[in-house]
Length: 224
Image (tube, rainbow, N blue to C red; front, side, top):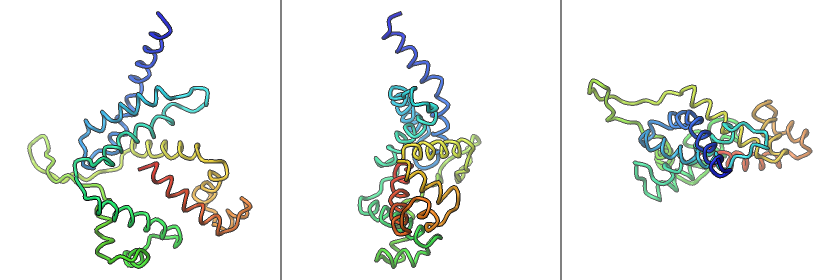
């Protein structure tokens, strides 16, 4: 067998052996407005991309590398519109409210109220509620059981979802510069305050606060 044929066979085998990752990721995003088959198809494309781009010499498990790539292809379906169409103005409002709410949560150290978000963004309470509603995953009100009875499909967290979440976050942390990774670990894994983190990293509290906000926003973009 030629080297090209051998490589093709290995590629096909590796793809087939890791289809379970695609199923796990598809189960995670199921029930949010896009059919399972569509999620699985997009995930398979991501798996093939991961197989082609994976570098064994990095010493990273393939699943750790592949899950974010698979999820990225699936989430592209949602970014491209999915099955629920939302106007551009509502999408922009949703993004503004979501990011504003996250910034407030970081600065306040707790979830902000609707009134606090509205005041910070110069919006009405109703606009904030509308923006948050657009960001929420849709529920299926027309799904039917095998007996033909309609039901409301409420998503329930699964072990596969928690696994894919952890793998995706671990991959993102691995790719951060060392200082940024230490900042996140100190703040969210070791429970250090911004002042304590600043002392460890040789930064000021203000610098830690600003950097933390940027990192959280960037990490959230990658996870979504």
